[in-house]
Image 1 (cartoon, rainbow, N blue to C red):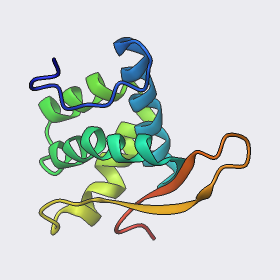
Image 2: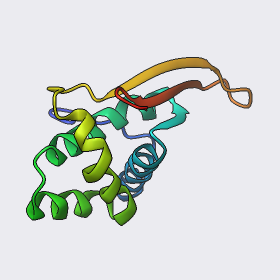
Image 3: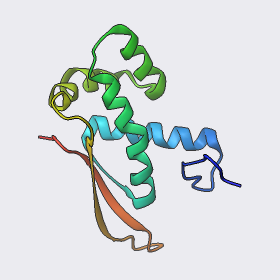
Length: 119
């Protein structure tokens, strides 16, 4: 039974799933736009948006908490320096998911994930 289990499994172990979401979030914060499959994009929202919300209050404890979740100093620095200032006025919904055509190789649904206030 799947009671109170809300995340997608992606048919991979939980540690690999966490690494996948960390990597997607790091690339999203560095590049501000990424292209991935639609289920991964939808799952990324639930992982990345709370991290952006934590970054709205800039103190040492929140920087350490975000670094613990992302494990990438460059992404954390960019989040707290430039992305945080653009998201202060927004109460949530920091990411935009745009659907694309199917992928050629396996006909997977593709999507673009971008920050709403990207330059």
